[in-house]
Image (cartoon, rainbow, N blue to C red; front, top):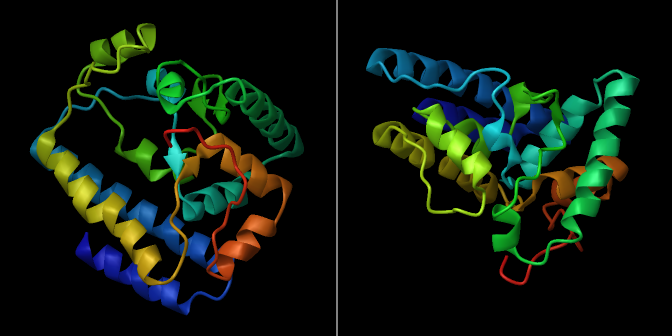
Length: 223
């Protein structure tokens, strides 16, 4: 894990374009996917998540600019009909969120991710770190949370050692690496920021110049 972080740090320092940064982050994702699969297998951890199970894909996802720009680049490679569907989904998602007044209200609702296609994640290889870290050892808790979204006390079963490694050596480290290189790491709701990024290059240009990427996006009073 540490070597992967060092490689990412070095590549960010050498990157001159957003595409270079995106490629470095995507490679980091791939390498860590391999590392974690090996760790999970060696530990005998039984994760129940599988393709087509999307209970957790109705929860608010907060992302950082580097995640948004990688996803946006990934979407540009989609066929026209799929890109158009994503844009329609994102616009509808924005309308839905415009009616929500607080963060707690958002977390207490099932709002499908606009990037889902028939319960399948359309951007799975470049999904955000929060999504990558979200897993369960028992589907019953996922089903309960989906059916009772306002019960925010329900906790899914996870492996504490795996969670610690992920939080300390991956999620937190990636944000720190970007911050050390002078980049904005502010968090924004996935759908809202992605729509902004796909509509305009302004946020990417601002972020590349190491300024705050997204300005004027909706926030809640207790964000």
